[in-house]
Length: 395
Image 1 (cartoon, helix red, strand yellow):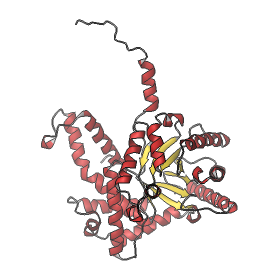
Image 2: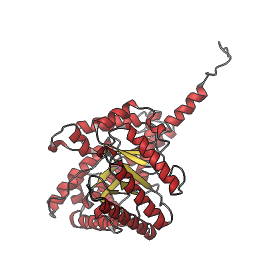
Image 3: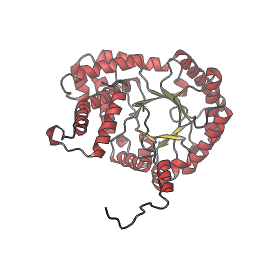
Image 4: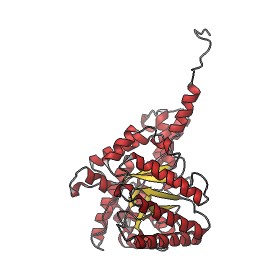
């Protein structure tokens, strides 16, 4: 073989590749919850998760009694899928109704006298330690603190300090799965200040470096703008930024939409989520969608089904756009959340698996589909996500 150049090394590429690995480590490999339950701190206690599960099970038992009921909510399903989804929802609500819990000290809680918020932080810490001892603490859990944008960052940090100090003192450790949600990030500088406090608090509590991680909420156009112009943001936070959660109501209000248009599937929200995805692509930061602020208008099956249809439609919209997690604000949402997620994954799982097998065998998939390597990666990722969402075992 003839060559024009004998040496094909590219000077400096070692440093470039190392920087690429630092900036873009790839998607998170760990399990990601499909939902986050949001509970105001003054309404939270050690039985909250159990009571949400029981309430959701009661609703499912009363209003999801048949396959026809499920199809009235989700629409027509392939043969056998409705029974499978109903069985999976019932098992999930009985065994693990909440995958991710967030105790809220921000909008859902409001502004309280200092002594009252201190007392609620202590009570929440006591409840979490009790849940840890009982084995009822969700796989992921944490709190949402007040925003720095409200002008009182000291209150935000005091609550976080009191809560974490109380949990670690009572439990003897910080249980795994902790996250803190940092809302209304109007200024990029908030993130660095918050990350620095987490590092100091971590050291003060005797925790391993990197234990305390947070998720930022994308709730304003300003946040989307600085995400797009700050390629060094995620590396600058030393791995502490774990996720970005979209806040539909603050965002749509900030964009001037009328109340009737404050919905997850509005084009304004689609743009914000896509801009966030592009800004954080490849960084390992998880993405989560927002919530539906509604509950059944009454206890009638008609009203419960109407709520479930609306919520399931929003969940499907998020899933189709690659957002596999969202916030739930009422026990009824657990039923429609899990039903929509299970139906979504079951509908495509077998076909995806067949296409991967065809690729591995070196042939086109059924229907003459010629998959590209990038599509195969996407199929494998989708199958892995489906396996975790459908119960965590290969099926």
